[in-house]
Image (cartoon, rainbow, N blue to C red):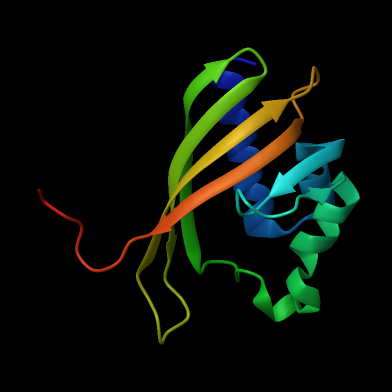
Length: 134
């Protein structure tokens, strides 16, 4: 993988997240992928398990991020062989009772020879209040 390949993957990831299109989700991942929403959590194993999780997190489709409720931007920070670190932000405008949430993300990614992710580990922080100026 190179920077351009990782950026293309990140762009496809963002689009799949926006649309929840099963084939777009499936296209991102190796069949045996290990996907962690939290670094310390047990992984979701397998592409089909990720598709099922994205389409109905916790068995409740209402828990999905609704179209137009967020913006995201991710970019490669470091690419070395089949591994990459991506950074970015996710900005939420909804729900109406808690607008303006911003998450800072770092993802550890490993890719197979076909450019599909085989390991995904997410680290994130929610911005609280005004960012520090010091």
